[in-house]
Amino acid sequence: LNTLGRGAGVAVSRGELVEIGGGFRIPEIIERAGAELVEVGSTNRTRVEDYAEVLPEVRAILKVHRSNFRITGFTEETSVADLASLAADADVPVVHDLGSGLMVDAAELGLPEEPRASASLAAGADVVVVSGDKLLGGTQAGILVGRADLMRRMRRNPLCRALRVDNVTLAGLEAT
Image (cartoon, rainbow, N blue to C red):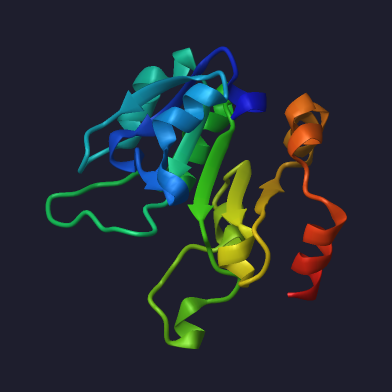
């Protein structure tokens, strides 16, 4: 977000303004990234039209998977595919934070469905964020996958150098 949204707006559904592990909240993360939170929709219903209204004032769209709770009842959520279609014409990247995510189909393991990074990319997300320790059961690490041009931009960000993973972490991920 510091690379893609710094100094500008980042659109997020009100229903996705979650608190992640360690007590960090999405609005605080966006603020620390130097971006401005642009809330769209409502807690229980966010449509693609809500994002379209703010598209001229944002530099990125952030979709956050609510991995540790559910909103049920009178709900509506915009898919990654719909966001990608909307954002493509405006050259606004869609960042999908999956939290943990899965590498294989959950049904094959008899588990409840969880999104996979590969499915998110196939649906048109430009950047997908997953947690190495949750995804792989290994060492603590954030993993970013996505468009090569955006990955290059992020690598050039001075924060990438300061926050990059070390060889021990990489070896731990590889071993896992």
